[in-house]
Image 1 (tube, one colour):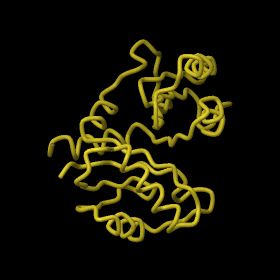
Image 2: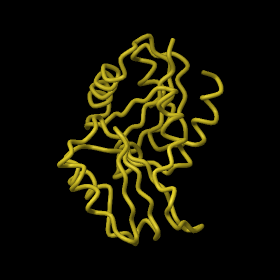
Image 3: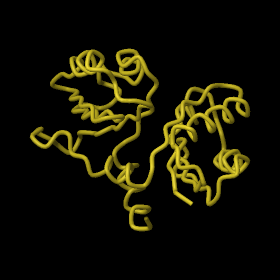
Image 4: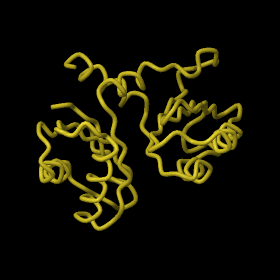
Length: 181
């Protein structure tokens, strides 16, 4: 069975608290095997017989909304996609310092050229943005709270839901699971 990674929006933020044992049980209710969670921010690793990540996204999102009582945007990636996300270097020429933070946002689909231009126009000296397929990369040269950008503004500009994670989340998951593939 293929291994998948679900990155969930609206888990353990904004008053939506879900214990990880409950989240694992919700995924097991769907018939998934080897369900694990990774840190308490809505990252779920599981095996499923389906070969369609988009079908899995819809199935998981519907089940979570029914079970939790609110919509949970769901973004699923395969082991190879996760490894590619972690390995991608969108800012090779940027002047980086130890206080910089790289965030990666997941999207359900690649944005149109028009949306891409609007999104990239948000880049400043403090915040560099890049799009690569269904992922956005945000290099923040200031503390996150001091940035004029926010997840809400990025979503509004993209016209689509996204969920952001620090690059360390992707690096750690890729290091652990890419070797097993």
